[in-house]
Length: 341
Image (spheres, rainbow, N blue to C red):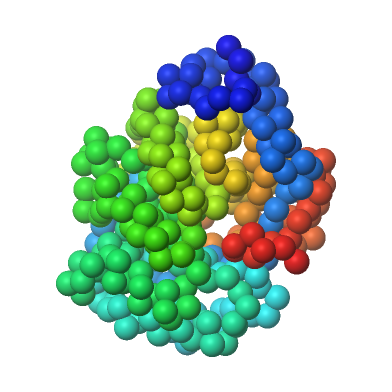
């Protein structure tokens, strides 16, 4: 089957890629990446700030959430104090905390924008936006409008998991489902906000559900053009109920899903190799398997590491550039909106 062609892959053709010899698949995905970006590999100097671990969603795959009594929520000033000069992007996510009103989020974004006017503020997943709206009794569109006015630039891609009603009902029924996730991103794009998209894979999903997830993303991107990148996230098995019965996602499967994503999501500019969950060495291989972005230095990250990720908590910019060099790439520093410096 010709994989890289002038026409778009169908869902059935994408499913067949799960049975294609791995070396041939990775080669095709890398050719696709090179056609878009040449040897360039993008990265940012960024922080991941998790402002609260109190979460009423209690998803079966999550090791980050805590009950109220054992949780910690950062004040706005604590978040501000964690940011420093030299950062090009701040990525802010947290649990679904019923004690935080929209005024907290507006103040947080507004103060970051005032103190650091040039950095990209990428904050709050679609599930957080939906939760804030429900708590306040307002629409998700109004939440997005208010946060945009405060200084928000983009939404992260988390909270999608796999866009499947079956998985939603079974493993994370307390938080917003697939239709809401897609609607929030559609609304964000309509306001001029950009966003990313993710897929949490390697747990209880089927291959058909992975492709169905990608097809929903591709369709929305056709409609809005607002997605910047897609980030495949291999499931972390540590310290969560779902992971107790599962083995870590094999490296070959991580690369396969990433390569299929690159070939199928022909309208997504960027595919990230998220080294925090893959590990730096596998991420370097992913840069020759369809990925063109290494995310960034990712200082302070807690969510993946609470689930057993063995990667360092943050890398120096020099280390990021070294990984890109291992993969034969040319490092290009960016901010969170793919503006280059």
